[in-house]
Length: 340
Ligand code: NAD
Ligand code: UDP
Image: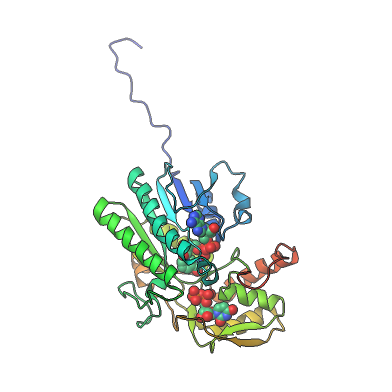
């Protein structure tokens, strides 16, 4: 090229929508489905997990993919990586698991949030917190809207989880106000599906395991308490939609299925779908067990255009098929009672 000619501007050849996405708790139930969805969407996914409740089996299908990396790491310690987005899911979610080591549960929620928010601040990443309907405690408002401040017991057995998650929300909003970190807060209601831990003590996994083994189905209390169950695929769509939403949508946003069932009704449906010979047995209601829970998802519809699609029977049928296959393959031969 003659010296007096100006070189043409170099075309940007690496323009891509591929983002580097960190998923903490990525080997867990929700995290592994999220990793699947993000890799399938063409992103470069970094999964961080300490395998407290998660498992390599959950992410086995991703390990050979060059756009998936796994780091064994505890989020209560700082992490130095370069990413564009962070989904902070690391935290045991079932009462059996989060009450096993309550101090560690608080550390995971609070120190984990501080570490991941510090990382987001340093690398200017957008960060989403997997918060929970438990921030509403045993609610006095029904269905629960995001404007409701909740009714939690700060010193009870569930407090390590509920108050840890509430403090994490506080940290997210303070990092946003004080440091301009781009945050998204999802309040996730009871979610179920394949890859739930078989003995995490949660009601869906318990009932399915009991029904498939023709063992007594354990109803805690009178079974009149309610929950609203969201199928995992719907929930993952909601998390990704919230992350991708415009900056006006920081949340908190309720994500869950607004169809409410009593626990006794859930037991009947599981028995019917499995064709089980199980009988029902009553067990004491755990302390601080919320009586009624159902999300108001008006904001999710208005702000991110999201609503769940999978009805309970359809989602339960898929979940039962997964549990049945795992049991038949002997994968869970040594699984005992919840928490063992
Ligand atoms: P899960 O127990 O299957 O997954 C949690 C993952 O976090 C596991 O892989 C675990 O090993 C990992 N983990 C725990 N402590 C860690 C630490 N200190 N450092 C690194 N990794 C750690 O639970 P889940 O159901 O997949 O829940 C995921 C997130 O969603 C949690 O934050 C939970 O509070 C939230 N959530 C879940 C539900 C639900 O119904 N599943 C409802 C509300 C909120
Ligand atoms: N539950 C039950 N039998 C079980 C496990 C749970 O009746 O074997 C009840 C539990 O007391 C609660 C509801 O089912 O009222 C949901 O419990 P889970 O632990 O799944 O979720 P969370 O209470 O955290 O919503």
